[in-house]
Length: 238
Image (tube, rainbow, N blue to C red):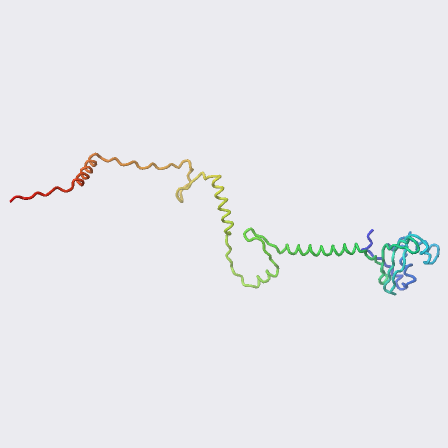
């Protein structure tokens, strides 16, 4: 089990804690950090001194550092020979409260999680200021900007109903739809009722007017007279 998030204390031992009694305080049965199968428990049951731990093999607890009466550091280690040991965990006692010291992997993991949480919070806060509109695109909208806008006198700004890009795209789409689906009704004049395209008929062209034969003769005489010219004048005889 992960014991990094818990602590243990027995207030009755705090006034008498010192270098000689701190291991007895740590070996209390209610202490969750103490392993009852260790060599310290064997030595305690056989009423031997702690010097016999060097001749045994297994898990043991030793006092690593002491700064009376505030700080004590106890190490849990695996003894393989009288001269060879392997550290397993460290525990520090501050004002009678026992904590387990975190290992290097736990420290790095905690620091990385703290950094990632800070970065994620920064991204979430930045995304809360992001705004988008189809006609404007993306922009930033901060709370300080709202307060400044409230203090400034409001001025009405005329917003364009649409951009040039939107109008060009809409015109292209309307032209494409008109070619695919031609209109079925046509309104010839404003205010009139729409008429189906099939019922619209073209007006017949006016036929050339018939010219009467009398008018034809008059036209011919006029043309011939114009061609011959005026009659010659005769000399008068005296």
